[in-house]
Amino acid sequence: MVSLTHPSAEAIRAFLASQSEFPLTYASSRGDATEPPPGYVVDHTRARIGRGEEAFARAKAALERWQQVRLGWVEARPDDAPIRTGQEVAIVARRFGVWWLSACRIVRVLDDPGPGRRFGFAYGTLPDHVGIGEERFLVEWDRSTGEVWYDILAFSRPNWLVSRIFYGYMRRLQRRFGRDSAAAMKRLVGGQPDRPIEETDDHAT
Image (cartoon, rainbow, N blue to C red; front, side, top):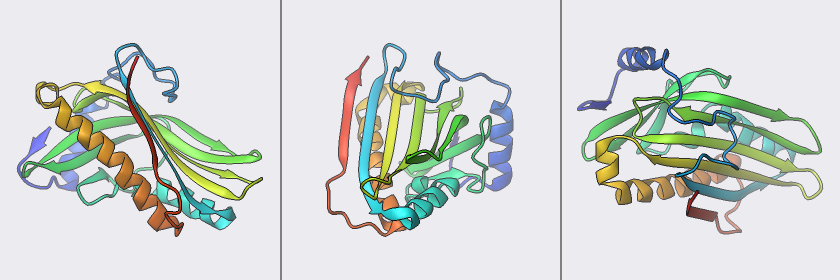
């Protein structure tokens, strides 16, 4: 969906309601991009964002409030959407002077209290989305080293005609999203950018 003005809360509710009865637009719904369906490009961004239990708690709270997507040029709406399987959310991005709304559904929530403490979730695309695929956000606390990591793993391909025509630009935005999201999480957690953000992409399956 494209809007000439910033969509209101009511417009976003109506948009998500129009998508709620549809299935996901891809075959896999495991919330795990390690084995994507054939024909998709995989993006992986990983960054150390802090150390210790407090840093992990701040990172977890940031994911629960969708702050990893609040980047100025893109946001999640509603931004108080609960992190639970089946929850729908709109990703709203402003490009070319208009707002682009893309509908997603949370397909998996991970909350692992084990020695490698982990929290995160994955959402998949619904029909009214610029792309087709899945994206997983994860924060990890390695108790043995104290390090807290932020990890984004996604697989995608274009959906709309405009995204197929301008696929090169779409790929640049996807890479920018990974960098901006990791940088935002570092700021939110208070970690120092002492290591470069690790990115891998363009691995079509």
